[in-house]
Amino acid sequence: MRQQGGVGISPGNVPVYYGGGRLDSVERKVKVAEVVLRAAILGLGVLAAALVGTDRQVRVIFSLQKEAKFTDMKALVFVVIANAMAAGYSVIQLLRCVVGMVRGSVLFSKGLAWAIFSCDQVMAYVTLAALAAAAQAAVLGEFGQPELQWMKICDLYGRFCNRVGEGLVSAFLVSLGMVTLSFISAFNLFRLYGNNKGIKSSGSW
Amino acid sequence: MRQQGGVGISPGNVPVYYGGGRLDSVERKVKVAEVVLRAAILGLGVLAAALVGTDRQVRVIFSLQKEAKFTDMKALVFVVIANAMAAGYSVIQLLRCVVGMVRGSVLFSKGLAWAIFSCDQVMAYVTLAALAAAAQAAVLGEFGQPELQWMKICDLYGRFCNRVGEGLVSAFLVSLGMVTLSFISAFNLFRLYGNNKGIKSSGSW
Image (cartoon, rainbow over all chains, first blue to last red; front, side, top):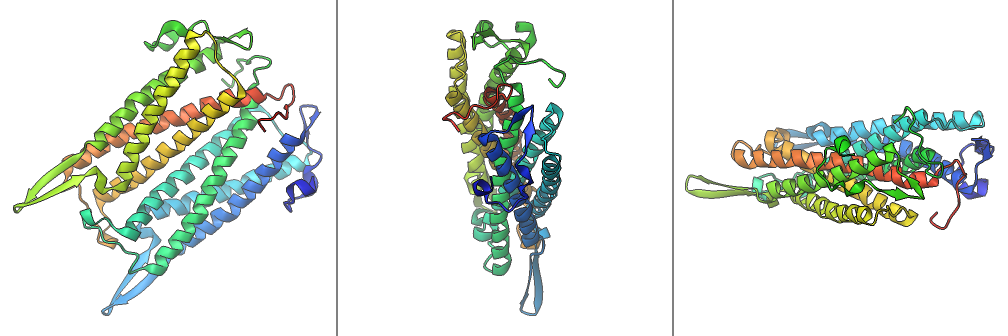
């Protein structure tokens, strides 16, 4: 188990049982992947929010003081909020994983699986939308849009733009992680509707 | 069947069987929803691409001829491409649905389910990213960014901006449809891994 993951996560995730059966190798890998991804998203989300959210640069040009702040671009504010949300959400999910491990069981009720799936999906789409909007703003900042007389600003605020770039790389990894997690939670949810016994038209539909 | 959907799609989707069993009510609804959504995405994707892709406005200001084209904003080009892709992809998927209906069976191999799931996910993320980038560009066009000396252009090119707005509403509906379809294809894929018999660690993992 420890060789497989090499994660540094609590080794308490070995005796995980549910539905009466022992988790087989695929399920264990999925579980480990989930914990690793959520921890990575926590770190990278905080990093992205901090990099972009503390970004400002003051330039003095002909005794005129000019300042670039991340709040000048609403898309960057969106990135900070989305990544902070992703990090906070990961904390909650990691707690859930830890509780599941400590109790030695995974709560696989359909309700919980639906809640996790829905939240993961929303976070994946929100972080991706924020990233796309900020990428568009960053491209405009880097290259300008001469046809519209929008001048590039990164010549003037180089350090500011570099920091935004680093933040967006981190935000990109967060999005990628959330997309992968939304696959995992879809897997965890929908196999509860396995068709080898036919679909039970239960209340959750 | 026809009352349920009220769709105007070929009624040939009634006798759908697979896995030896008759499709129950949930599965029939899911199938109808998929066809309706794919048809809607086809129409709305073409509409969005056409609205944005044919958008241009010429203004003569003090005998100077100025023109706004959708290619001035790379994000709008991205929207046109993404929505044209979504429309083309929907044609292929609708053909698959029709073939399935005509043959009276749904090919539910894991390979096909994985392919559909992957493509739906990619299209959902691509159309959403294009929409977010274009929305950011549209907000800049509408309100400008005074801190960066980027002036709003929609005062000058009102008709151009209105058309972009209509296109983005259509693109938003396409994204929403693709997100819903990616739920459906996740459902169709992962229930093949139903855990009531335990997970078979087959080649596809």
